[in-house]
Image (cartoon, rainbow, N blue to C red; front, side, top):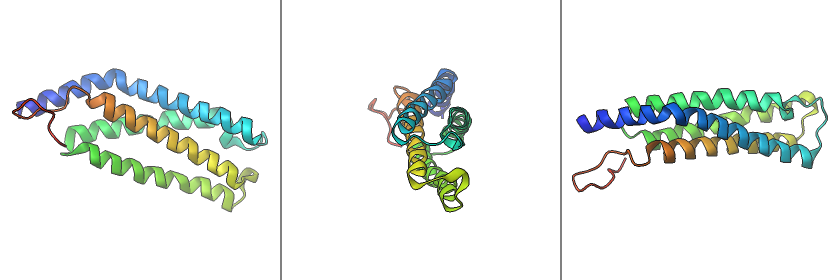
Amino acid sequence: MRNQVSFVYLFMRRLIWLGPLTVFASTAVVFFVRLIAVAVLHPPSTFRPLGVLSPVVDTAALVTWAVLVFAAMVRFVCDPIPRFKTVAVVVLLLSFLPDIALVKWRVWDATWTYAFALMVMHVAACGTCMNMLIRLGLHHIAPRDNAGLPAKW
């Protein structure tokens, strides 16, 4: 029990700097993907989802939620990493639905190429967020077994 308490404490302390760093890195990656998409696709200025403000604000808000969910899962769920990965993939797939709806209903003259660019931005944000939280968040603080090896989740 003491090992688990110290693990959660160390993780929560690490999350103080890792959470904002994850939000910043995910937002930067999405902004970079957006720059490439705009340079290649040349969407009209009326297509707001590929504007500057919308991807940045949405990514920052949703990655903040992902950090909070991950912290709660580490704190309250046994076996948090596989469960977080499952939740992240399900949420990623659900995040494609609005992009598909844009094309289906021709909102802002959306095309499949624009929707695909938005989906790539979602994948980039999810990948960055998951890698940073799992690899940096739990690196060197995972509970150890009696032999001193990291315990399997």
